[in-house]
Image (tube, one colour):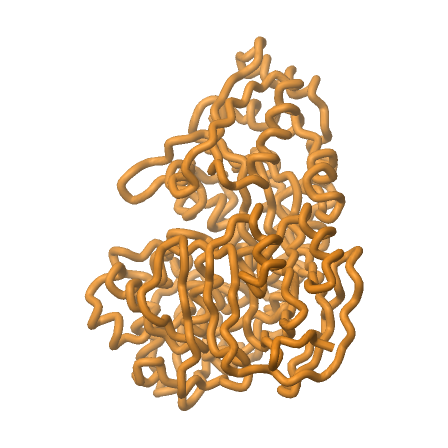
Length: 546
C-alpha cells in the first residue's frame, strides 16, 4: 500500500454542499461572534455590541420532535438537533458545514485505505467514563453490529477499527472514501456514547431512556417522545468555553404556533417557515437570521409502487409541475426552485440538468399515454394533518397535477404515523406511494445518494437502486482529485435525473432562525435538522443584544 500521510482540510471542503450562511452580528464577553452573518432579507440589521451572557439561563427551543435519543437508532431525522447537545461527534461541522475538530483533533490518510484519527485528551463522558480509542472502537462496532442499529449502511465500508494507542484510532476502509468519511463521523455514527452506560442499559430502548454522552449537556429527568426534552450543563465538559447556556428545553411547537410562541416569550429560539419571516422582522422584540440550505421540499414517491414503477410515469410527473410557481407561492420568493436534488453551486449540481424537465403538461400527458394511461392516472398521497406547510404544498401540487392528467388523492393523517407509512419499519413495509414532504439537509453529496437512492438507504422506500449509481458514488468518495470527484458526482446526479428517481424536487428551503432580541451567538439560519448551539447565549437580564 502506498503511503499518503497527509491532512485533508482542502479535500474535505469539497465533500460538502456549500451553504451561504447569514445571520445578524453580535459579540459577547466570551468573544462569541457571528462572523458570517447577516439578517434575513427584508429584516433590519442588528447592532453589534458586547453584552454579558447569563451562564445559568435555560433556553427554550421549539419544533424538535424526537422519538429516540440513541444515536444508532434513528426514528426522526430531526432528532440530530437534540442528540448533538448530548453527544459530541468525532468531527464537527461549522456554520458553513465545513469539518472542524470535535472529539478528534486531526485526521489523515496513512495508507490508501487507512485513515487515522487523533483523539482529544482528558475528555470524559458525563457519567465519568473516560473517552479514548477503546470507546471509539466500542461505538463504531455497536453502530455496525448491534441488531437495533439502523445506521449500519453509513459504515458499510469500514472493514476494521484498530486501537493504536489511547488517543489514536485507525479505520480500514474498503472502498476508501477519504473525502466523505470524516463527514460520516460528524453525523450519527460519530456521536460517542458512554460504553459504561450502554452496557448497563442492555438495549437501545433502555439507553435511549437515559442517554449518556460527552456533549455539552446531559438529559435531566424523564423526557417525552415528540413532546419535550430537557438538557442541562454538567461539570467536567471539555469545551465549556463554547457552552454559554445553563441548559435547553426542547419543546415541540407546530409551525403555525411558532411565531406566536416567540412573541409571547414561550420560546427563545425557533425555526420558522418563509411565510412567517416578514411578520417576525416587523416585531422589534425579535430577530431573524436566514441561510440557504440543501434541504429540499418535494413530492416524494415510492417507485416500486404503481403507477410509479414505470419510468415514463415518473418522468411525466416531472413535466407536470411548475416548480417556479410553487416556490414563489409558498416561499414569497425566499427559496430557490429545484431542478435537481442538489442546489446550484453544490458539487453535484449539473447545469445540463437545469432544463431536463421544463414545465410541460402536454408532454406529461403524452408520456402517460405511452405508459398505458391515455385517460390519466390516479394515486394517493398522504401527509400529517398538522404539517400546514406540507399540506399547502400538497394542495398546490394536486392542482397542477390535475392539468397534466394526474389525479392525486391527498389524505391527511396522524403525523406520528407519517414516516412509518412512507418509509416502512422493521415490522411493516411502506404503505403509501407518495407524500409531499422534505429531504432533510445532507451533510455531504454522498450521504444524500446513499440515504435516498441506494437500495439499502434508510430513506429509500422502494428498496431499489439505479444500475451504476453505487459505483459512481463509491468512486467519487475515493477520488483525491476534486475535479474527478465533481465529475463523478455529476454523473450520479444525471443517472438519478434520467430515472426520475425518488420523486420531484420542488425547492430548496431557506433556513430561518427567529429569536428573541435577548438571544445572541446564533451562527446561521437553520432548519429543524441543523441548528448549532455552540456559542449561543442569553444576555444577563435578558436585555437586547447590541
